[in-house]
Image 1 (cartoon, helix red, strand yellow):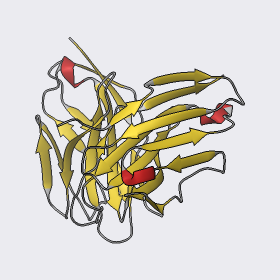
Image 2 (cartoon, rainbow over the protein chains, first blue to last red):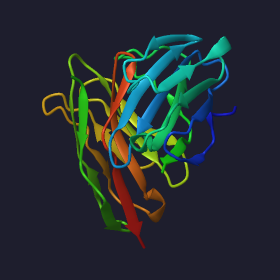
Image 3 (spheres, helix red, strand yellow):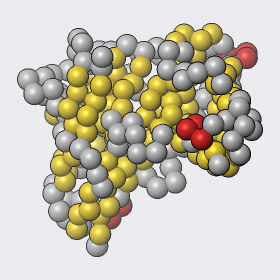
Length: 118
Length: 110
């Protein structure tokens, strides 16, 4: 079974340009998450999809970030226009069941998309 | 709010040394606790987890015990190997989100 796949693995863009990151979750996983790790800091939640619906987007830093999941399969995260502070690793994750605190459900992460804005 | 604090790195150990990476958490309610590992060039992988107080998670020789009284989930391994070199993240699950620590980079030298 294929895991969570992300594309591109690495991207270097100039400030002001646009970048689109793609995530393909594990087949059959309705729940899809985006996380981000800025260098040396903690991995932070960005948003959560259930199928094609945004369940929680409280972690999105500002309106330069747009996430979509049309059709409830793969998801894209667009940064437009990119700023220097957007550099970091963007992780996508998926799970079959919705997370519940006491259940110990885990989520499966992709390898991350490394974004460098220069 | 919910958060995780873990030991700052980097940590460098000789092969067969004992490893401890400290992790403490703040949470309302009773979260599930996790350790994730990121090997060079790879994604985050679940290493172990515990869902309630006094549970011990274990995998690949690593262990961590959910201590409610000290709000801790320290990661330990009795004898590390070069192949354990990676970045380790402590995390808790509260509701529909995971909260991660900053990560601890471990390098094991032969």
